[in-house]
Image 1 (tube, rainbow, N blue to C red):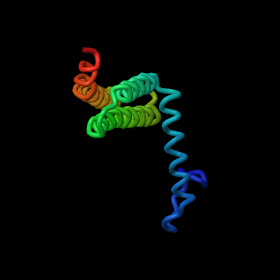
Image 2: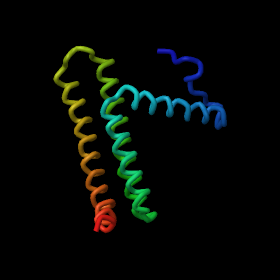
Image 3: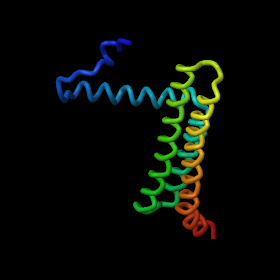
Image 4: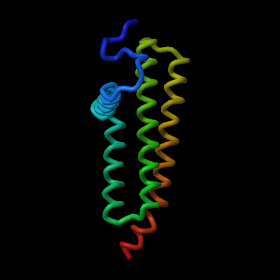
Length: 134
């Protein structure tokens, strides 16, 4: 398979324009993720809510670190899960139990990341939220 000219890798070394193109590809990937994946939109809403609550509660930098880590963990898991699912669907469009197992494992990773992020959210946002409400 031959890649389009703008996607072919060059062994010429570092180039600012190549780095900028790689950022454009990554941003395009995030747009596709949010536009086409329902769960990514749920993650986006949860991320925005967590950031808004954190801003209102004026979290410390240590608390923000945990929140950012939790949000990033979920987005990474969702992006990898989507990439794995898309690759599996491309390789084997018909039902295959082995492909189903692979997709289930990737989805399980997203679930683990989401549960961990929820726990981090409760431990990080819970105490200051309780203080603000009492």
